[in-house]
Length: 352
Image 1 (cartoon, rainbow, N blue to C red):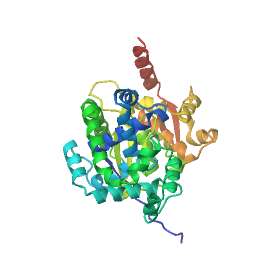
Image 2: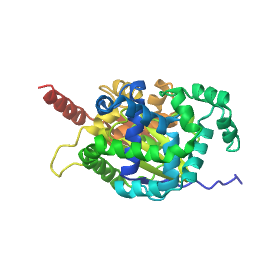
Image 3: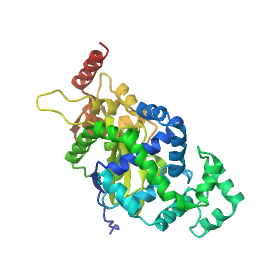
Image 4: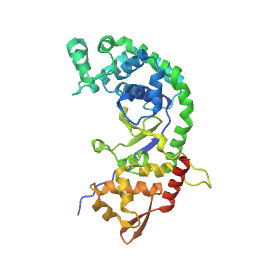
């Protein structure tokens, strides 16, 4: 008798709008904006509005481990892993209530994870006490801040709590409070759309359904039991992972998501654009011009795995780009001309 293996259930998917996570993500993205193409223009505009010394301070208190998300991951784990949906005042009050020693411990964990290779927690105090080793660590971390300023902070981590809270408060007051109100509806619509889908997919398929992208090979071994998706208005063609306290959190671009349609209206163009915004899926569109093909024919013409092709085809069908019919045990795919003509009409209208 063959060995029977129990199938692993799909992960639980939660879609949440979180002010604290969005605030810290926006701060981090403002810091790294010069290094990535395709991020929201709002980030560069915000950099121009903020005083250079404050930009340096923000980059320091968020990015001293050498990876901008590392310290915010520790804040997430300490305050937000169970309930990320706090108001601004609740978030700041919780930051203030954390003991100074807790901030120091979070910093040590961030530094340990930010090193290459990573350090044990026991090694971090030794590193901080050795000036030459610490400077070497900071050079390896490739920080966008003054080396002396980083050394000063890390050799006196009692400064971290008040400086981190001050940076959060200033960023909120100067730029993000108004931006949060301006983008909240978009994020809520995206979350509402995804909640209605009631996804029952394995993680690779779930990731593609939400982000429109294949799960990177570097993360192919991820098999979380629970995933928290957080919409971002600024992340552009990228995504970001955090995994504090065992819960995988994925920041995804909510500007390319369907945000709901009214009865009687033509289908929105966001799903169509997302389905076409990929080189492999454009190859599939080209293959299917004027003809129908079954799945294995498509697989044979593409230099990727059958599982990857299947995920691309499922996304294109769900977006309305492709039609699918069954014949025997095979699925046959063809383009949906009505959907593509609708998209072409909308783009022509935008062009005036």
